[in-house]
Amino acid sequence: MKVYITRRIPESGIKLLREAGHEVAVSDKDGVLTKQELVGALKEHNPDAVIPLLTDTIDAEVFDSAPQAKVFASYSVGFNHINLDDAKSRGVIITNTPGVLTDTVAEYAVSMICAMTKRIVEGDQFTKKGEYKGWAPMLLLGADLKGKTLGVLGAGRIGSRVSEIMSKGFDMNIVYYDIKENEFLNTQVNAEFRSTPEDVLKEADVVTVHVPLLDSTRHLLNADRLAMMKPSAYLVNTSRGPVIDEQALVDVLKSNKIKGAALDVYEDEPNLAPGLAELDNVILTPHIASATQETREKMSEMAAKNVIAVLSGGEPINKVE
Ligand code: GLV
Image (cartoon, rainbow, N blue to C red):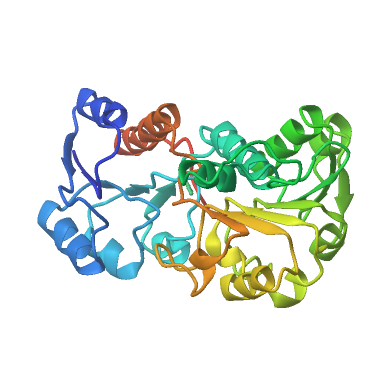
């Protein structure tokens, strides 16, 4: 059967699809397909399955241009780019790639926490610019993590792993907010549940965000909530941009109401809120938290396995509902 992939991904999954006897077409555009290009490509290929990326908006118009497609197996763990109601009403199965990127994204969030509190990016720029004239007692002073409080918003797979690393590896105290308590965090990580995001924001020295993007989490960190953070606190976001009101964050950072932020995701990717890139107290990276060779190959294989399962009449492994 025919599988269409909306952009080049690692070969490992494509190989599995071909070994299973499927015909695979991959968009040859070096970039995200526009809606019109995506619709055109689907009409041309009339695939039985599609592997889209998180940069593709998948809605009724897209589903209707691929009427044969039984499954859209997203090459991502997040699925906010897919209209699940439109999929459901057409009987199209949606899958994602959970689990394989948990450690990778958690390691990245931890790296951002370290890079920010230890001022690694500033130090790198300073040194490369030739500004380092010798050791100095007051040069680029950062902050320690041991004994401080990490506030975790969203205690799913990634939030839990970040909590575990920061508790066991850095001796941080963990407070977390989620819609329900996490038994593993409570019993194995010595983390404390807080029933509101506000409680976490007021208490934390570093806040790390790991909620999925839902109607209920859009602008979870709005101007009012950002104002609750300590002036000495840092904010890290490796989840989805719209969880933070980015313009409000620019204002807070500009007026030094918090110490700093490290962002891997943005409200309107790839655009940045005006003023964000000019700030010194922010680290910005291009949505690469899951971007390791190993994980991207696993994501490719996982998407392929979901397609193979559905096209052979079986149950998908990672169905999203
Ligand atoms: C990355 O952001 C993903 O959802 O896989």
